[in-house]
Length: 266
Image 1 (cartoon, rainbow, N blue to C red):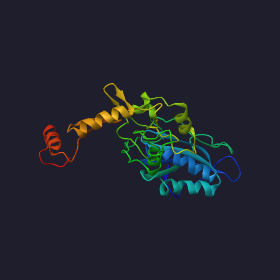
Image 2 (cartoon, helix red, strand yellow):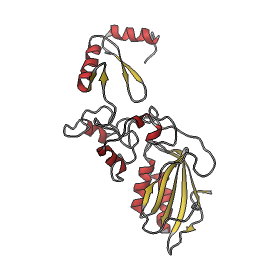
Image 3 (cartoon, rainbow, N blue to C red):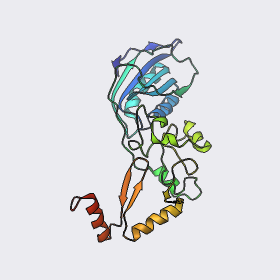
Image 4 (spheres, helix red, strand yellow):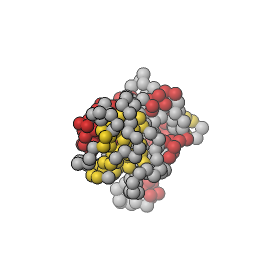
């Protein structure tokens, strides 16, 4: 295995075709890297596959030499904004290369993968993106005012991950099976929720709850407590946030006393 660029091209079993195995290390799981690779390979007309493996991403690509060479460079230069690519290694494919016309797929993750073990980085949570915000405030959208809206470009990561490789089954979201509509988005390479592990909606995902209330009624009950000078613990997908009225000096003083922070900023 060699560092990119400069690895020798491997014949792919057909005239004018080459194949490479590309291993990308760094913060590359939970950042939309597999969907990005799928789109990139499709754009370049390459056959092959990609998967999460331990703490890295592995892929095999086959096609015209220039397209394969472009793939090696672009996985670094066009990586998702929340990724941190630290190493791109290139080697011979571990088996027969993908045949012409095989297409490109996302394979199930591997707990170990090929090569030596590497550091496993858990990605941070990502602030809601513009596309999700538009859905959140669009009355006809099925995620209108849904507080847990997210996609491959944003949403919870570190607060829901329990183990790597990063897949829904190893997050707290495994307790929420996808509905048909969300499953369709998850499986569609053209959708921005393609392999977005925290994908959810009001029909299948977490919901607001307050004692025996749900939805808007639960939200209104919590708002009433805050308006009355109370403190509310908001449990999200992976932790709690303490909420009070910042303009209510008494509520802020009570929160400081409970947190034992008489002066330190929250």
